[in-house]
Image 1: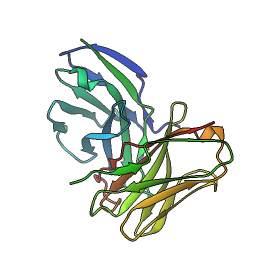
Image 2 (image 1 turned 135 degrees about the vertical axis):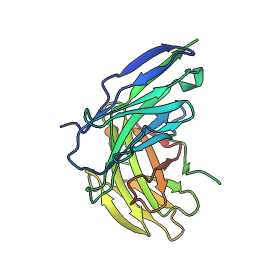
Image 3 (image 1 turned 180 degrees about the vertical axis):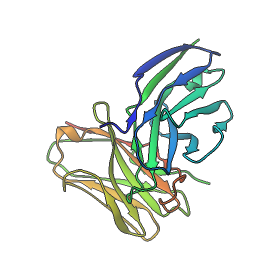
Image 4 (image 1 turned 90 degrees about the vertical axis):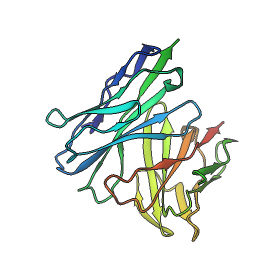
Length: 116
Length: 115
C-alpha cells in the first residue's frame, strides 16, 4: 500500500494565486515527521517545510504553510501568492520514528506550473 | 557554507561499462544517502552511509555499491551498466541521519544516460 499519496500529477495555476498541493499519508506510528521538498528543473531537491506529528500548530515558512489534518492523515502544502519561480516538482515525504532505518518515504510528486 | 556537491553533473556511458559518482556532503554532515530518480519509479533509496559504514540499503542489485571516506565524502559505483540504469542520481547529506525532524540536503544530482 502507498504510504505517501500525492493525487495531483500536475497543476496549472495563475501567478499570484494561492496553491494547495495535496498529500495524504498512511502510518500506524504515532511519531512521525512530514516534509515537503521542491525540485526545480535544475534537479536539486530543496527543503521547504517540516511538520511533526505532535506539533500542535501548522508549520509555516514564509510563503509556505502546511495544512496538517492529523485525523485525516493529510498534510497539504499551501503556497501563498504564487510566483513564476515556484514552477517545479513538489514532493511530500514522511519519516516514521519507529522505522529503524529512519528513511524518508516519498510521494510521486506534483508538477506545478505557474502561468504568467 | 558550501552545499552538497555532486560530480560529474552529466555522464553518458554504454551498456556493460561501469561508472563512479562522487558526492561531497555539507561540512560537518556525517550521513550520506543516495537516491535514484526516474520518471517511472520516482525517488528510490539506494543506500546510506555513516562514519564510513553502510547503515541502510535499498532494494537494488549488487551492481550498485558505494563507500564513504573518513572525510564523509561518498562515492557510488554501478557496474555492468544496463539501459534501465539511466536516471538522475541524487546524493543527500544530513548531520547524523537519525532525528525525526532531521532534514536532508541534496546535491544537484548526476544525470546518467546509458546508451
